[in-house]
Image 1: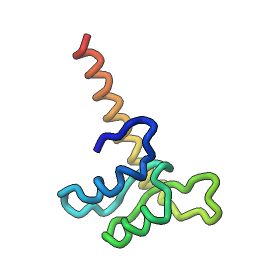
Image 2: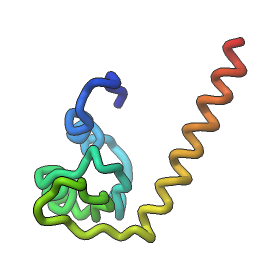
Image 3: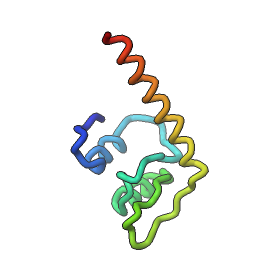
Image 4: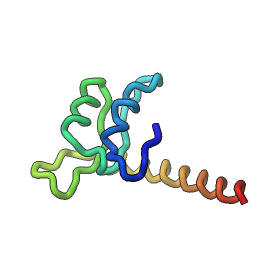
Length: 90
């Protein structure tokens, strides 16, 4: 699901949850996805949200930062794909 840069991350959540994939155990996401509705919908589907709380949240939700470190691998993969695209389009 691709959205514009100015579009909120919340708009992509229903499309992400409707994807026909095997049942995931965890959802690794950044602070843009931190919201009670997102967390509740994930928990109701049996998916553990691994989302760090926003700084302005009154009651910060728990986050397993050990699991959240794996998100770095995903970010590095996307960075490599972007670099390959840059070389391919020259």
